[in-house]
Image (cartoon, rainbow, N blue to C red; front, side):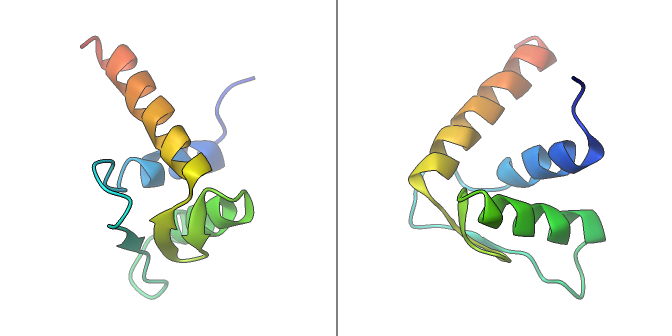
Length: 79
């Protein structure tokens, strides 16, 4: 099954979270962010990967997802 546009938006949003510290998060501003980014944040929150529906911090599961996402990105980039 290929990645859907929604999944790609979620993966791209996960890559925006700082992976060095769980004390840093992001904020998705509904009035300035692309609609797919707002929807991705809401979906990641619903899945328990982030702490707020507009960003916040990564949950433990979210930290794991970011790690996998970064690894996949690195593999696909050929690094």
